[in-house]
Image (cartoon, rainbow, N blue to C red; front, side, top):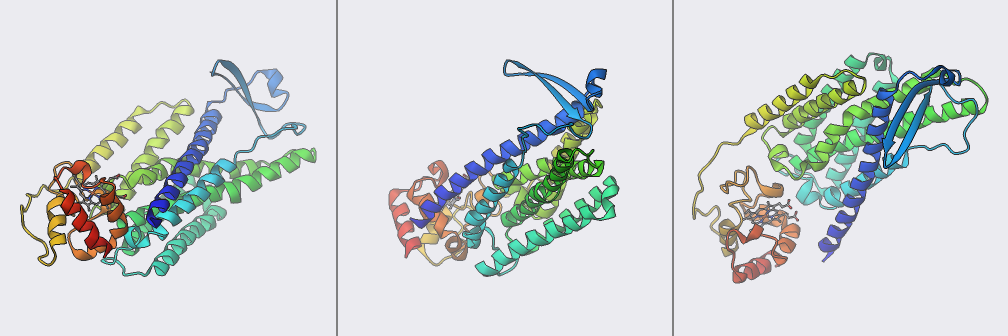
Amino acid sequence: MEVYFYDWLNLFFRWFHVIAGVAWIGASFYFVWLDNSLEEPPQWKKDKGIGGDLWAIHGGGFYEVAKYKLGPEAMPTNLHWFKWEAYTTWLTGMVMLWVVYYVGAESFLIDSSRMALSQGEAIAAGLGFIAVGVGIYELMVRSPLRHNGKLFGIILFAILVFASWAANQIFSARGAYIHVGAIIGTIMAGNVFLGIMPSQRALVEAVQRGESPDPKYGAFAKLRSTHNNYFTLPLIFIMISNHYPMTYSHEYGWLVLAAIGFISAFARHFFNLRHRGEFKPVILLIAALMLISLAVVMAPQKIEAKAGEAILSDAQALQIVEQRCTSCHAQQPSNPGFASAPAGIVLQNAAQLMAVKDKTIPALQSGYMPLGNLTAMTDDERQALLVWLAK
Ligand code: HEC
């Protein structure tokens, strides 16, 4: 019953997280597009200090947007800030991390074949991992390295690849992906909280004092917001990746994440150039080819079903599972519809079964599993298995 309500918590916060994330990324994409699409204003606007001009039509109305070079002469009474989208996305993301991976550490965070952690140790490792990752980024972005955009990007990418590898030594495959995502998401929210907001506050204060704002504030905020821009596509991949165990449960899952992260950030580059008027579709083409090649390289070798072959001989329960579940829930499923174990759940021995019992019981009770009852499980078997699991 407890698990049932956790599922509702999970649903609520996932829903909330996605909505907040859409608002954040949507606003962020819009402003990047806006900034890159600005045109030179007419003289009378230039005289007011406006550096960029843009016209748009949306929802049946005309919009005239103007970006000031530095700031307006006087503060407007109502100035819109965009920060709660970011904070809410981060906060709901942390709740999700807790509800899914920390409460459910046994099933989703710990893989004892990698590191036999207790729940407390796994949580501490997870939080420590995020803190170290974000700490390194904050040191880097405050160092002179930030003036060299390309080198910064290369070093940051190398560090994240290392983080992906390290996470895969410590956590379960799914848990590893989500922790790399948590580092990136926290860096992004940190960019808003620690960089962009303070810079903007300084800008606003300067305008209020009637001074011309120091351009360094605007530039610093812009740098962090550019980093966030390149993070968005890889991060969204990580958010949806847990539906695709073929990625995280791959033997070289850490490398798969690095490859997809690189490809998606590269694809983002196309849009950034395009908004600036540089149309280079070859970037998207290369990204698509890289993704297809990756899919081909990662394709698992087909194996034949070992019909009726019992993995363990002990209980009748295991025999049922063998008959009704492991065609899908195996390292290499024999069901041609699946390339790897669905939801990352492998049910090939009693220990594996017990480790995910909190998920298996409701899945069986609700009739959700076996999926579509493709394996024709009988009611008697379901009942017997439930009793065995709950004993
Ligand atoms: C035909 C393939 C198939 C068979 C057979 C099958 N499963 Fe699944 N199972 C899946 C898929 C696909 C998912 C992932 C569903 C999703 O992501 O929503 C899944 C997910 C699960 C989950 C995770 C559910 C959750 O809430 O996260 C459990 C537990 C599970 N299966 C247990 C079983 C058990 C026990 C059996 C045998 C009685 C079984 N499955 C048989 C395909 C199958």
